[in-house]
Image 1 (cartoon, rainbow, N blue to C red):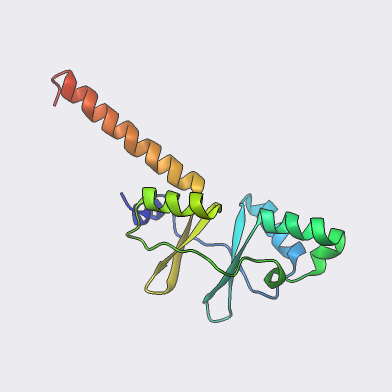
Image 2 (cartoon, rainbow, N blue to C red; image 1 turned 45 degrees about the horizontal axis):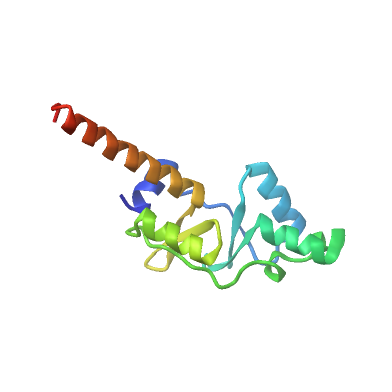
Length: 144
């Protein structure tokens, strides 16, 4: 299984905002879409950063309600780890665990094709393990 298979199942829609969007706009979008992060893209579509719920909380802790007027570019994470469609869920989970982040943009030849969350990866891994267990049970019981 690969990240491409996960994206095929969940779809490749990526919610994004431009770097000049306000933190208030980002917070409304996160809440309305019930998502934990939004990709920040330049006008030409290039990946500029990612803004997570944690970034919003960090901004509010530092600046209070005035932080909502800041641009997302002031608070987004700029150094982003990415995956390719060929990345396996275990490799992606390792990247996320070691980097302590929960959302991973997926790039194909430099173009953003999707975003996977740690929840997407855990779900895929559990489904894979369940399938392996079912196969082993069938083998042991003589059904294979």
